[in-house]
Length: 277
Image (cartoon, one colour):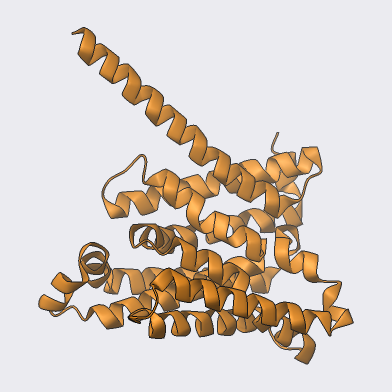
C-alpha cells in the first residue's frame, strides 16, 4: 500500500504537495472569505504570458508567472473603485487580455508550444529539490505575513470601513493580500500547473469552511484536507496510471463534495430527530 511513496520522485512529489497544501490553506481561506475566487481563477490563467516570455528568454518560469500574476493584481486593484464598471468586469477584461497575450506569445514560439501541456497541467512528479526549497520558503513567508497581518486581514474580510476606523489601513492590507495570492498562485503553478493551481487553492479551503468556524481552525483543516488529497491523489495516480497533478486536484474537489454531502446528511438527521422529539 505504501510502496509508491518509497520511490524517490513520488516522495518528493508528496513533500511538495504537502508544502503546497500549507501555502494554499493560509491564503485560500482569505480568498474565499473576501469573495476573491474569480480573481484567483483569473490569475491562474493570466500567468501564461509571463511564463511564455520567461521560457523564451531562458528565465525562471516561477518568476515570470509571479510577475504576470502581480501585473494582473495591480491592474485589478487600480480599477476596483471605478464607477464605470464593476470589479468583476475589470477582472474579466484583464483575464481575457492577459490570456490572449499569452496565447499570442506561445503561437510565435514553437519551442514553448510543445511545453504548453506541462504549463497547463503541471508535473508534480518532476519536482526537484530546488522546487521543494521554493515551496518551503513560500510557506515560511506566507505564514509570517499571515501572523503579522492577521488582524488587518480579519477586519478587511468583514468590513473595510471598520478596518479604516480602527486604523488598520485596509488599502495596504488589501495590497498585501493580493501579493500573497500572487506568490501562492506562482508557487502552485510550479507544482500542479495553472489550471490545477486554482483547484488546490479553493477546494481544500472551501471544504474546511464546512467543518470549522474559527479562521485558524479553518486553515488547519484546509491543510489537512489538502495533504490528504495529495496522498490519495498520488496513490491513485500510481496504480491507475493517471496524471498525478490532475488526480490530486480532482481528489481535492471530490473531498469537498464528500464533506458537503456528509454535512447535509448530518443536518437532515438532526432536524428529523428534533422534529420527532
